[in-house]
Length: 467
Image (cartoon, rainbow, N blue to C red):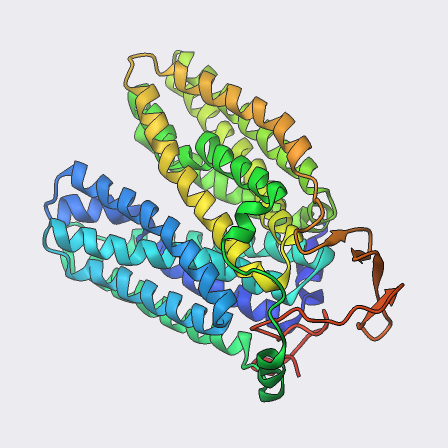
């Protein structure tokens, strides 16, 4: 079996590899504590279950705001400064859970961590998008998702070994280590992004503004708004249910709790296996096709869960549930490449941070709405209704994905073509030296970049600033 991801990783710029490595470091720390937050707050800190789950909601809502703020900072100041702020805030937020003794302490820690969580998603996507382009960009997004799952999986195993409700100090240690992982990851990320050379700073200051840069640009981009709407719906019918309603369905159906543990193991293994063996093929596919495949995969997942809900006997229920989350993994692997690639295809570097911030906010919004809808469907005494409604939603997303998942002309006037762009009637091609060549009237380059560390797609040294 050919491992495509190894060869694909070697072909990415060194800067991109470093950004992805930083993501893996923070993911290991996240895996240490992610599965245990509710358990820690209830059994170790003695908070009510409702309060513990409310803290998770606080994290999700705060992440919505964090993504928007990080997008603005990345465009207005610099991506490097934004990354440093996001990672330091994440370290403070997660380490604060070690000191939680009451409700308000938990809410405050969740608020700080949630702001950083949304900001980090925006930072990771913007950093990868600015250091790659074309097929390399899609490949990088896919491999980043692999690294995320591998890191969280390793952290989860270590956390399961170390965590103990009988010893609060062990949980405190896990949250402190998670905080340290963000600091180490942030240091690697800041080095990877490099420093903007003084000559380019002067040129950027002297250059005139190339049009509006606020979130009004995002709101006027109809193509992006359609993608964001599809993102929200996919989060509601898919990701928003993965760690909430699907475990709830297992509990309501009277299934063995261990089924859910093995289902998540199967899910993670399938995600890594798919991306490791097929990342190149996935990155060469059109985003519309990948999003339609995601929707179809998740519809299949809900069908299997419907059969599990209506089946008798633990072996059949266990097999169907584990198979459902394995099928769900197919959609995850496709989505991880399709959505960020599509968003960054529509974006120009002038507002790339805000586009990724809006994408982060759309994901967070769906992750807030998803559990609310799933919980409402599960409380009616008819658990099969959850699978029927959300499965139908996934089927509806197939048509929307094929229609909305096609890159459209950007709002800055550049239409994305095969290997070229069109700007004010002149075709912009890539010369042999990587410079832009106009096939038509010359147009001065007035686009301002706050983080000018991408000159081409070749490997670059850490901290070189693109020089």
